[in-house]
Length: 219
View 1 (cartoon, rainbow, N blue to C red):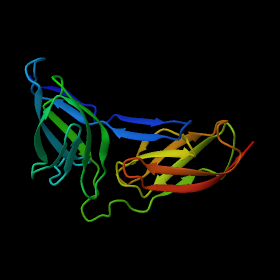
View 2: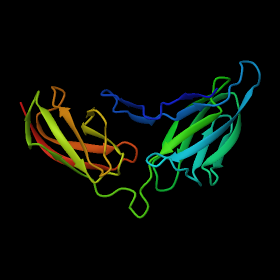
View 3: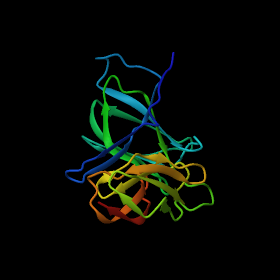
View 4: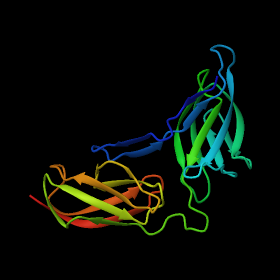
């Protein structure tokens, strides 16, 4: 019986207020179709499948790059697949395609528990459309007191974009844009935001496309 573990919609967002180190990692969708018993082998044959995030269509000519003991650079076929035999160990994986978003680089461990099928979903522009149109962000007003909440709206991002608002190193929750590329959310102005003129930046974390607006923070 096939076992499916769907974690494709989970995102890990880590933002340090101390060292300004930002990391946005999209976790690969892991689908276990066959199993390998511990101790049977010191390697694993894995089929990587690359799909369009919105349409679930295969993405041929995608690049699956693994670095570890060696550098393995594979291109997917017309079905969006590439199969690689990997010795057990720790790797760094990057999945990419021209004009689409990128997954990684992120850690990838190969052992007896690793699924034999790994699906990576990339966000790509619609046919006939530019990869990302010109994004804009608006707020419900221009001045805020410490403790108030900003209501923000973005337009012009790609459909399904993951939009995150930030003021400096302080960031709010991620909101996915709708089919029209519109996202809406809130952002709390707490005591960590300095008084004075501030820039609210809304960024698509899968592409780094962003929009900015100036606001005034009052004591």
